[in-house]
Length: 327
Image: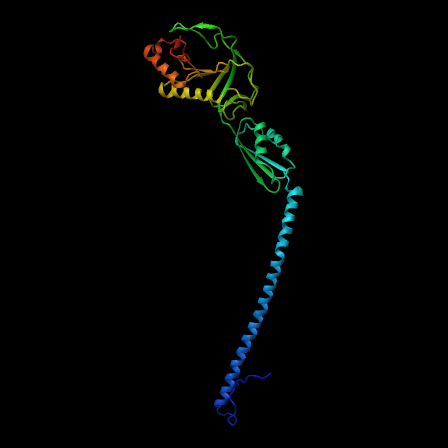
């Protein structure tokens, strides 16, 4: 292999120092250009080899990627269908209200243990919760893979505390004012029903369900409603009254407070008669579900213009269409 001529580091002796001919300069320049071209060609050959290797790997991957993807999919399906790692092994109950019985909710969800978390229907969880917790409002379900089920439960709000009394009879009485015979609710003093155990309070939800809540919990600072005229004492979780009757009683109390300036001291709910009495410090006003509430208040306004509050001793009955019975 020929070597490229280089200029010496120290000057040549004078007897050897002669001028370079043009032919020699041309020869040296040609050698330098040839060396650069050889180095460039060598680099290009190396890059072409690398490109060929990369293309070989890409072609191999293209040939086998479908097979590898199918194998991975089969493994994942096998894990989902047969592995116990993706079964429900833990259930966490989150509650918003302290009155929720977490143990009862957890026992209701016990059949879900061992089921595949991925294929677990949300509707099944919702149904089990609402069956064991009647006053459930919303159920939010989250799945934390591989095996944790989280259930967040919110309950219907409590709108009133309850006291139960049972009147001994409902005999006819003579109503003053219009001379009409009217069957009154609770003529004789009502009989008290056994109170709940210590630390437990009877309560009513906004959709008319009877519940028992711990004393000092939700609903214990709300208005008290006396419930009477019932066939049997209800059990917790059963429907005590219709939502329409409860809503009408609340609307009537708001109207008496806002438009007439009354302060309601007692609320009595008659279940079988589907009526309610709202008592102030001076008298009691009787409402029912027969006629619209606006019509009953219109009768009361007509009564105030004709008779006035001073003529009332005990109650004003607004249940009869076209007349007002009072005492």
